[in-house]
Structure formats: C-alpha cells, structure tokens
Length: 127
Length: 111
Image (tube, rainbow over all chains, first blue to last red; front, side):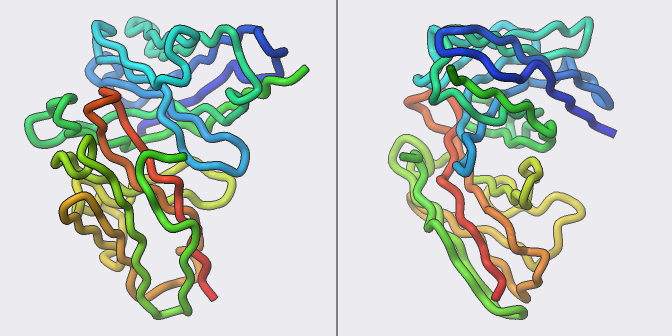
C-alpha cells in the first residue's frame, strides 16, 4: 500500500534552515509528481510547492519562493524540501502529497488531485 | 486569507443534510478548473473525499456528493453521522500561481 513518511521537522531559529524528507513506498515514485502542503497550527491547508515526476519542473507559492527548494531523488524514492531563511510564519505541519492525474493528465489544466498524504512533520520557527 | 472562500463552520443534527460552499475567482474555479474536496479528522492528515467536482474515490460513502457551477462548488453530506465531524477543504488549480489553492476550511459539527 502507498506510504509517505515525512521526517526532518524540528525547532529552528528565525533565519535558520531545515531540510525535510518524504520517503515514499508502495507505488512507482518516479512516475508521479509530488507536492508539499503545510498547515499552521489551528489553520487551514496551504500549498507550498510542486515537482514534476522527473524533477524537470517546479513551482512554488509566492510566500516561499526564493527561500524553499523542492527536489527529489527517484533512485531513493525520496522527496525533499530545503527551507532557508525561515520565518515565524513558516511554523506549520508539513505534508508531502502524491498526485493522481485524470482526464488528459495535464498539470496546467489542473487535472490532478492529492490521493495520498503523509502523516506530516512539524516545523517550529522560534527564538 | 485563502484564495478559495468557505464558510468557517456548518452544523447539523444526525440524519440531516448539510452543504459546504467553496467560492473562487476567474483564475481558478471560474476559469473552469475542477474542484476537489478533502476531509480532515482531528489530528490526522487530510483524506480525499471528492475529486473532479463530483467523483467519489472507492470507499467514500455515497452520502458525500459534490457539484460545481460557475465560480463556485459545493459539497453535500446527507444522512449526517457523528463520525462526519471534521474539517472539510476544497482545492483547485490557479493559473496565476501555476499551483494549487485551498479553501480556508469548514468545521462541521454534528449536533
């Protein structure tokens, strides 16, 4: 069965860095796009970043652009999120989510949804 | 401020029907992009409930249904049960972001 297991969260000071990992199993990781989605304490879901199945395309939310980098290692079935210049407002549970496509499977037509989510890893930015 | 707008809360008695709205704009729902719905039980990760406006993944009860019209979408839950008490989120694609957008979430309380 599909499993997504995030790790790497913790407490970091403002301006610091952290690298999150998401270990995937139970599906052909190299065939699927992946996303990071976060949720601040007591708040709603907030899309963070997308990476194409082969890593050739990446998109970011404006709030993290230039500070966060999404990447993947298909040989190790692992997704990453490098987070630099962290701010208090980045405090959240970070989820990795697997994409499933439908229709023509065109990302730019929004023909995808998140069919599996990890359990999340908590990142706390505080001095 | 979420890009998609949902009511913060809805409530209903067991057995009743409730609906949750999700309103977008011309760069997301209004542009024709589909809407997907997720259920998040307390302390757990979101779970897919409805995809492509009105499709239920296997295992999701028929009590859950979705629809979309213009710049809005709706999730309907009939025959409310205590275990339906959760947060519900709508999600779509936004062409101005080249990424996903979510609603702010709606807390469903079963009275």
